[in-house]
Length: 79
Image (cartoon, rainbow, N blue to C red):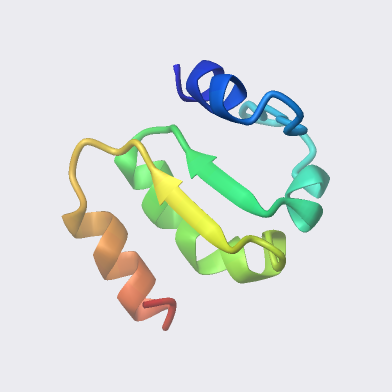
């Protein structure tokens, strides 16, 4: 998993996994965000990421296709 690989490389990292319905407050202080959810959910979240994760210097996803995700980022002015 992404979490296990990250922990191997950064054993002191504070890693928080969020699921549907969880409080998104931990994103406010995240410096890195990995979005692992269906592509349509990622695309729907992209426009909100600047407000949800203002400190994130690194945001990536595990979506199977990038077209909808990139289109959402372009539309939100995040590219």
